[in-house]
Amino acid sequence: MLSAYAAGNALLIFPSGRWTDTVGRRPLLITGMSILAVAYFAFPASPGMWAAMAIMFVAGAGSALVNPGQQAVLADVLAQRPGGNVVAAYSMVSDLGGVLGPLVAGAVVDLAGFGWAFALSAGLLVVAMIAWAAVPDSRRLGPAAR
Image (tube, rainbow, N blue to C red; front, side, top):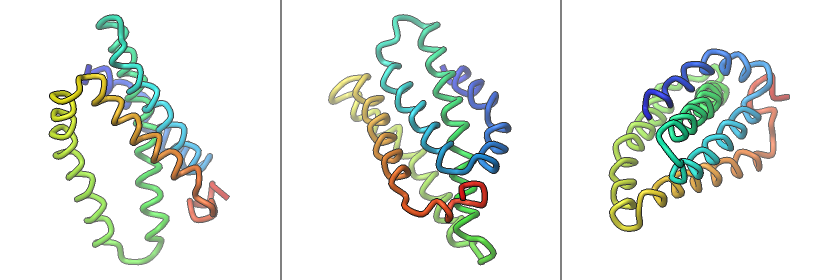
């Protein structure tokens, strides 16, 4: 499953970086989060291994649409200012999510079941997607977003 996810990510990560610079950050962030949320909602209902792998491939592709945009927004926010502390905080929070996420997901699986862990992840993505859709000033999201 992880290999299928990684393959979907690898397929789109480089083109997504170019698209982020030409189309804008917000469209790819919202699209990628939408794809991820749908994939995470669908995964627990997979009828078999091949369907589950296909869904994880699509989730990896959605992740590839999100990641360059996140990093580009960070660069846009920093512009020409020194950003060591901001980049460090971003990296630390990302790492914290990587450590705590599996612990929280494991607790959710123990308490409510496998599907609920993916539903929780999908729900968080929907919240983030709505927040990005509500960003009022797209001019702050890089030159291509203007």
